[in-house]
Length: 420
Image 1 (spheres, helix red, strand yellow):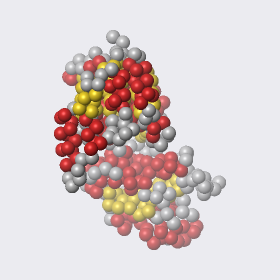
Image 2: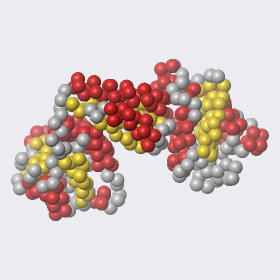
Image 3: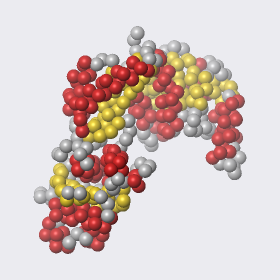
Image 4: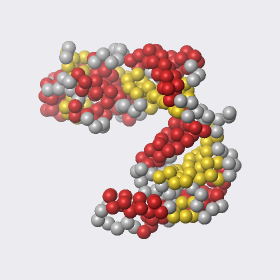
C-alpha cells in the first residue's frame, strides 16, 4: 500500500504579510515524518473567500488528507468554515451541542460578562462535517470530505491546534498507514552535530527498518526521533524499546533527556535528586542561564537565586570580586570567573555556583579577547574549575551557547557528561 498523501492549507492575512510565523505546519510536518506519510505541499492563502475555496478544491483532487489551520474564529474575516461548505457543495448548520459548550465556557472564563453574539458563529459548521471539538478554545475542529480528500479544519491558535493534532488527527492518520499503533521517543542530545549523530546511529537504523529514524536540530541541541508503527501496542512498544536501548548504548552521555525535558531541567532534576542546589553569577548572559534553570515548575527545588553583574562595579559589590583582579586581568578572564563563582557560592550558600563572563558581541572584541570568547566557571564540592570557550554565531547564539556551556560544566561535575 502506498503512503497516503498529506497536504496543509494555512489561512490568514497575518501569515501572508509576515506578521506571524506559521509554526503549526513546521511542527506538524515533523510529527508526520515518522509515520511515513508523504507531505506533498503547503498552500498559504489570505482571508479571501475565493482564495480559500480554490485552495480547498485544488487540494481535494490531489491529496488523501489535508490539515487546514486558521479562520474558525468569531470575527468577520474568519471565513474558513463557510468556504469549506461551499467547496463541498453543502449548506451550513448550527451544531447545537457546541452552542451549549460556548455558553458554559464563557461563563467559566468571564462569569460577569454576557457571551457576545458573534461568538455563536463558531458553532456553525458544514452540514456533512464531523465535529471533533476543541478542549482548549471556542472554535471547534471538524472533519469534512471533499472529493477524494478528508480535510481536518483546525483553529490556528498554536496551543489549541497542537493538542487537537496530537489527540484527534494523528491517531486517524496512523490507521490510514495500515497500522494501528504508534509509539515514539525523542532522544535529546547535546555535544554532537546532526551529521555525527546520524553517523553514530546508522548501524542501528539499517539493522532495524521496523523503526523510523528522524533528526532535528534545535540549536544548540540535536534530537533523534524514533517511531515504531505496528498492528498492536505490544509489538510497537517492543520494537521501540529495543532500538532505543541500542541507540542509548551508542550515544551514551550525549543523551541528556527525552520527550521534551529541557537541558537545564535535566541538570536541575539531578540536583534535586541529590538534595543539592545551584546559584548563578552572570555577566554577558544577563540572566539567561537563570531563566533556563527556572522556566519549569518545581525549579525552586534546585535554584537558589542569581547575581546578574554586568558591570565591574557590580561584580565587586555583589560578588566581592577584588578590584585589583578586575584591573589586572579584565572582566573576561579566568581569575574573574573563578572569583564570581566563589562569591556567588559564598553569598548564596548553594551547593554549586555557575559563573559566566565573556564577549557576546557584535562589538567589544579585541585580538586577545575576540567576540565569542567566554569564560565559564563552577564552584562547589571539590573546589572551583574554569574553562575558556570560543563560540561562533551572533549575539543571541553566543549567549545561548554560554548558558549551555555552563550547564555542561555542572553536568560533568555531577557525572552526567564527559569532560570536554
